[in-house]
Amino acid sequence: MMPKHRIFTTEFSKVYPLYVQKAERKNRTKEEVDEIICWLTGYTPSGLEKQIERQNDFETFFAQAPAIHPNVSLIKGVVCGVRVEEVDDPLMRKIRYLDKLVDELTKGKAMEKILR
Image (tube, rainbow, N blue to C red; front, side, top):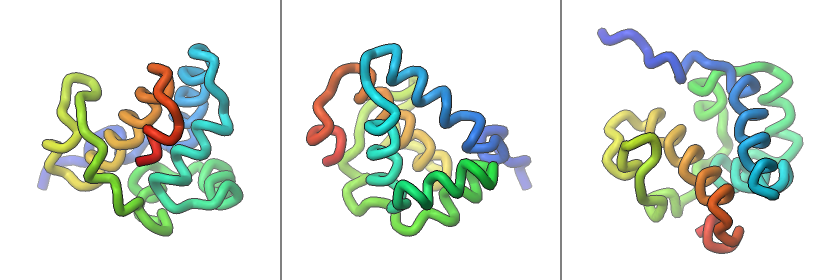
């Protein structure tokens, strides 16, 4: 069995502020980052807050997500040199989807385009 990828065991609460900082540097808001995460995962804002407080890792964060959005298959493109639609591991693909959505936000895409 292969060891788990490091990101799977990384606390979501450690990466979340990085998403927010990245967005704020490009004049986007924490609220927009939260909206994207809630759209993708089905968490309510308070559910998202609880996940951050619990310091769950990415694996748990996505395992406990109420509902991955049915339109995630429409998220396409390259993140960190990898085409998100070609990522084999289901958990890694969800993490890449999240990276891609935050990326689109920081590149100035309109929210209605990001939230397909």
